[in-house]
Length: 504
Image 1: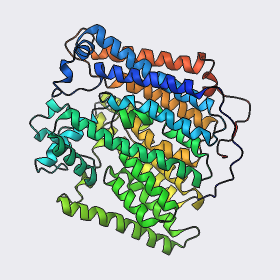
Image 2 (image 1 turned 60 degrees about the horizontal axis):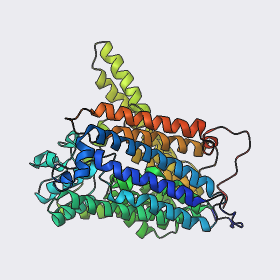
Image 3 (image 1 turned 180 degrees about the vertical axis):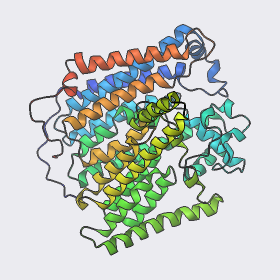
Image 4 (image 1 turned 90 degrees about the horizontal axis):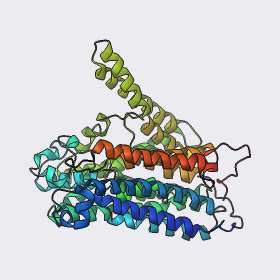
């Protein structure tokens, strides 16, 4: 790891960061209010469905439109507040840590009470927990085996698919369902507590990792934890990626501090949540081998790293009786595609071309998706075997980015996997951070206009609600990029040399 540079005297805050925090809190409160109208609500949540305000917001056309507007404006206001907070914290001195943490709490707290937004995965967690409680094998038996899974609210798309999660999260799912009897509202609360624990790990370890790289820890924390994508995906959406990422970052930190047994244990626990963090293991092995290590020592450290991690997972598989069943389920998320993913778009074009020629176009698309995966694995191998030892975490970030960007499906929480790894190794205040600004804006617009729980028997259709949310989101983003005198400079090219945020 690179040695940290000495910290200069910090510059004071520019303006009033409290204003940005308050604006973000208002945006988060709007998300909370909008969630009661268009957030995901289980059919089994009878108490909430009897609240008069929720009845109006969910089952009356005016209430549904009002909820969509709250959600769309609130989400985009949160993006603006994050941008403005970064502008007001120029200097990134020690006093900015408290301000950033205050923003994280103020913006995240309302989301703790929201109905699940932008994703229905938490209902799948409940259904999979019921699969575990029933004594079935979730790597073979989808939650369609559970008689009331539609009442729970789980997405029918994955009802017959094997779970893509590791043994640790299966146990957590089972524990939650046993504790709550499968009651959706209480189960959602417990899963949100798990997500908050993962988010807290990220908040704790991101500055520490940044310090080890000589990167300003406060700016890295702002880029990561105050980021609207981080807050909405990990708190509002309740993704288990929060716990996965928090454990992985903790393991990465202890590997950098040469506490390898603890590091491997933590990363293995992360793999036990979602196996994607297997990609961390070869880079931890390289840290263990050390700078300038011979190939013999490198392969020995890789073998010990893999042996310890897979050994732990093997013991867990023996205990739960499911073995390494999660390996066969790894392809489950890759069975879908989306238009804005480069490989997904290319596959769609190839499929349409094939169909036009009278062939099986989607079989051709599957070939494109497979090729994307193979190219991604090639990049992963390149970053494992090539590069400066001092930049191991950056190489890990680039390898994971290749896996994400060359997949046929790119979800917003996949992007959140990448942000802390790039933030702790340095995102320059030029085109690099501008890409992040545009990505955050794009994925927020997509989130607020994608998964809306619209009652199908009112005059406002799901299609109309999505169009309304998209128009509001695009209009707000256009204002931020082209009109807003405070934020438009963040998205535009400048002829002046950018200040270097990589210095402390």
